[in-house]
Image (cartoon, rainbow, N blue to C red; front, side, top):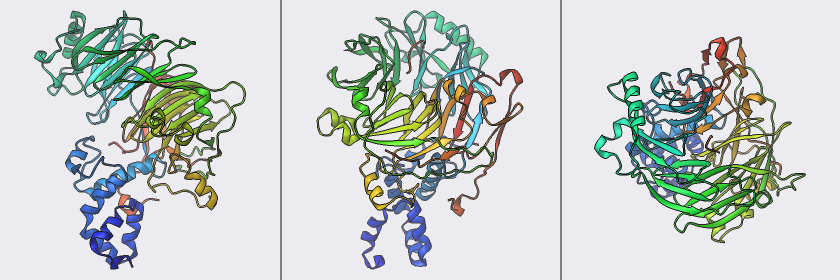
Length: 557
């Protein structure tokens, strides 16, 4: 019947089909297979938009591929291949296809903070002992470093667009920049690097001499804060540094203080975390989340933990029983419909941290214990166009000893490090992970009430040791991987070997029942992908120490 319509209308209809449905349609008849093949580029370009693999139809394939690491999109030369590669990655995130685990040796033990530049192919880490290391993600070798005597123990660091920021004793923030991105003539006029930075930079240059300078940094600026500060966050081009009374917004390329916002301390006088977007500054205390408008420098929304927990729908995730077999595949779980929030018994939950989506529209708020609230389009709440009840979704984990540890929010996914495990919440799966057939019709209707009706949840297999989970010092997410600190001796292991299952995510599709601080089913098309194991041999003395660990859903080489 559909083939009786004009070609233009048929093509338009096909753009609303998710990739799994498009593949199925090609198998129904020779006619449909030939039709799709004849219009392949046009169709798959629009399907890429449907799945949010591209921001708009005006985006060229060359522009898209330039944003990824070379290994990830190797041999990708058309929209169909690109969509297939991205679809497989998304299935891995949701626990429907094997991922790859890698433990890095070069950054050393006791890793504290992590920043990753996947396109450039390196990770930046600080340590509990001090120092800073830049590591090649493919070769696992040190590209560049700063000594332990220079970068303080437990230093917090931030990185974006080639700029690296970390704290120095005495109220300073050091700013370094990728050495290949500038010349001395480009240095800012104010807050220039001091002699100490230059001497250390020269020594590091001699130690790690390289023709390409990949992963090398040079001093850019030395910022002195006007007050004792407690937290900072860098989202290019702005560095947010906060004290209890004020938030300082620095323009890092020019090394100038662009804005100061009065924070007027809350009664508890505590600061847990700060975040910023292009339009807002977010300040987290134990019982409040305050949102300030950057254009006016004023408070526009003040959310208490009681208010945020009593609004919207609630999903209760029951901790699953995980199979320990090293070749275990993904195990999607059955879920029921969401319910209105249940009363909080005893002491209500307190805030831990907050992150905003890349587009600045959605918020993920981590509360303790083991609860995350995701607010869809929070600016509509600020403007009075929507309520928290209509925009919020609460996800809680049922566990014997619940504890919240770390939160990340990137590329439409929320990553959680909790006392019960490491979870990934995909907010919109676009038909990649269909809802289970066990849902009753009324339950499917109820699910549509959620701000995120296509939500899916997965959990990492093998990373479930309670004590080690509480020691996670950092959790970072890229489009294709999850990076965190982990003690290898606490993973499913044999003597001193870490055997990490290639199917490292246990897809949940869960039972749906209801800071950084200073000091701080596979298609045949995919049969060529290896499902092997990654084995790391570590020295006995280093087993009981945190190392940089990665679950790669893009399957790095």
